[in-house]
Amino acid sequence: MTRTIMLQGTGSDVGKTVLVAGLCRIAANRGLKVRPFKPQNMSNNAAVSADGGEIGRAQWLQALAARVASSVHMNPVLLKPQSDTGSQIVVQGKVFGQAKGRDYQALKPRLMGAVLESFETVSAGADLVVVEGAGSPAEINLRAGDIANMGFATRANVPVVLVGDIDRGGVIASLVGTHAILPEEDRRMVAGYLINKFRGDVTLFDDGIAEIGRFTGWPCFGVVPWLRQAVRLPAEDSVVLERLAGGGGGALKVAVPVLPRIANFDDLDPLGAEPQVDLVFIRPGERLPADAGLVVLPGSKSTIADLGDFRAAGWEQDLAMHMRRGGRVIGICGGYQMLGRQVTDPLGIEGSTRAVAGLGLLDVETEMAPEKTVRNSTARSLQYDVPLEGYEIHLGRTAGPDALRPAVSIDGRPDGALSPDGRVMGTYLHGLLSSDAYRARLLADFGIEGGGFDYRAGVDEALDGVAAELEAVLDRRWLDGLLGTAD
Image 1 (spheres, one colour):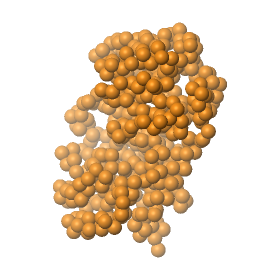
Image 2 (tube, rainbow, N blue to C red; image 1 turned 90 degrees about the horizontal axis):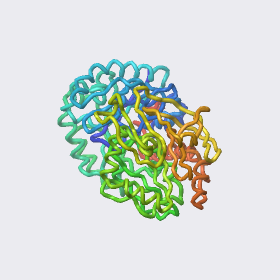
Image 3 (cartoon, rainbow, N blue to C red; image 1 turned 180 degrees about the vertical axis):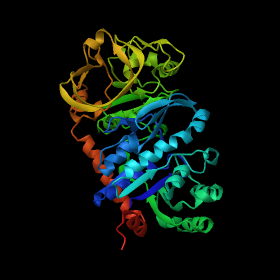
Image 4 (cartoon, one colour; image 1 turned 135 degrees about the vertical axis):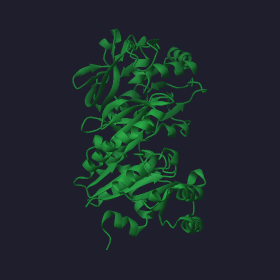
């Protein structure tokens, strides 16, 4: 019989993703066959699973923590926001359609079958499945047809552990309030709770635990401190960009404009891990810094709309000044498309705008097309002649004179473009910067020694670190029961 547990949050961004990854690594370290699962995810940070479909990047990381190949069934429903009101819907790794928020609420009950089918697939042969919820079960206005939280837990009969974030304040009220407004059917699924992101002397919260217990009857399974190793893990959601700041004083400043539909921004994590690099995320209302040596345009879920926002922020003029100062630019996926002369969308795939001028830094043009490229890839940098590996997730075809100088070779195919002077480069390959050899050559162009560490190994070490930190603070009886090692 496969054991299961589901972590749900009292709100978004309470740290569920990392806690699930940590539990998966604890179980894997004890020799268990453990699998992650998230019924519904909303994120433009996607990955290509080992079986060739799109899943949330977080579930890819959790599969890495579990030491198993990722699968589309680990995240059967992925919502990729394209606008403030609508998202692309990916079901079991493939594009299912598009829907605005209200329409999606009506659609959700039809997706429960796929969710339960995927859960059964993931559970088959596993000792333990650790499930991650989305948002909060306290959003009772969305309870009808729910597939992400209690709707799934009650249908699949999976016990729930609530996670409260003490760092944002009001954690007692959030837990007690959740207990108060949950219907009885949902409330009885809750086995207990965790307090996350605690700072300082944990005994100072003993009275808080007592009060939560008095109001809810729920046991506390642990008070988790700020996990030091978690900062070395890729972030799942662009909400974290609101808290990121640069100013680290590195020898090379790398500026990344943050656009509303930014996607796969964890491409930048390996650069941010370089000691000599000051990685700064620039928000609308801020200027691209004049002392940046490199500007990186990351992926976008909606290239045409984000190009408009790029211009509205005044960054086109900043980028032109950057080039006049001798700076360099890298565009990845949607960022690559923006760097060309023009982006056309004759079928209206991204919206009503059929054509828009690009930034003109590469002599290429992009035409959006309905066929979506989704694949893991082995590649090579033609610019530096070093090996690469990564993945592609994109719509559109890009061609033009600068594409005759491809930046990389992906599975033997030329990809991307280089400007004649080599200072502007674009590619569809995500994961480019994860190559230690590529980063070393890139930083050497700026007179900096870098790439002297194994980034991917560092992520794996961080997962072990998170697991060790969790084991030290989680309730031993509960953890041993979950893992099946209780006396």
